[in-house]
Amino acid sequence: MNDTAPVLSVVIPVYNEEDVLPTLFERLYPALDALNRPYEVLFVNDGSRDRSVAMLREQYQRRPAETRVILLQVNFGQHAAILAGFERSRGEYVVTLDADLQNPPEEVGKLLAKLEEGHDYVGTWRTNRQDLWWRRMASKVINAIRERTTPIKMADHGCMLRGYGRQIVDTINATRENITFIPALASIYSSNPVEIEVKHDERVAGTSKYSLYRLIRLTFDLMTGFSTVPLQMFSLVGLVLSALSGALVFYMLARRAILGPEVDGVFTLFAIVFFLLGMTLFGIGLLGEYIGCIYVQVRQRPRYIIGAVLEQSPHAPPAGRE
Ligand code: UDP
Ligand code: MG
Image 1 (cartoon, rainbow, N blue to C red):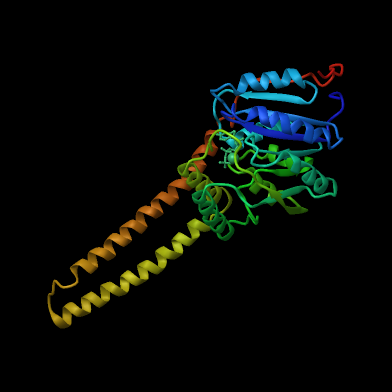
Image 2 (image 1 turned 60 degrees about the vertical axis):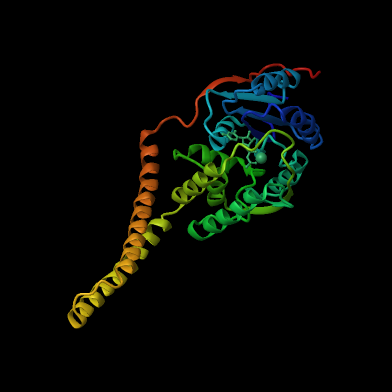
């Protein structure tokens, strides 16, 4: 099967997922077999330190014709892992999936159908989302901020079950930018996007790899990576505040001239000063976010480092299945 390019590549990042991999293998392959298209599954191991690598090797032995495993040297993050998968994918269409089965593999067919209709990017939103309440709250806030400050329009940017046409994948691969969020980039490049609804389940086992801190980081990266609106907003806020403080200074001067020296209101003044200090610090931090992005970009470090790849050579004789 491998000597012709597959129709579908499924890219799955894996980071310490030993608890879920057996169930994933059990559900994923039958679901993809049922689609009746030549396919490949690209597992990208993102520097797992548990038994994931050994399990991926076993799965490669079981289904060598459809399975490819990319082993990254250390943990580079979910999106870098997906990118590694993108760059090695051969399919006409690429679908990304989480390893933890929160995105049911049985839904891949729906995405493939949309891709085959000619949509070059298939976004998704989750019905009946099964996550902890604070994650759902956080996502709502992040979605709202992103919607207002960036050109990215999506119903739900958290869901990673998404489909991409070959041209979009090639464009993303050619982007020499430090990509922190692949769907956002795809939604900008796409000329014929569509969004569909998909089911969402609880993580079958293991724990989420995202802490609140990592979510906040992702939000900042999303904003700074796709928009300069926060910077511009900040100069506007700065402008308004300086106008107001200027007015305050005149007012205080006038009071002094008319009423003479007075100490009343010192604390109000303190409050105002602290507020302005806070704004200034936030502004410096915001600048730092952008400078940090530029710094990462100019260093041009590799986005990921591949340690080994398990795959059949494209011209190998078709392997028998077990
Ligand atoms: N993941 C990864 N590298 C990381 C963090 C996560 O490859 O540094 C993978 C993880 O194995 C899973 C997917 O990204 O397949 C989504 O992670 P997770 O389920 O922990 O995120 P959540 O569903 O909580 O957003
Ligand atoms: Mg998950």
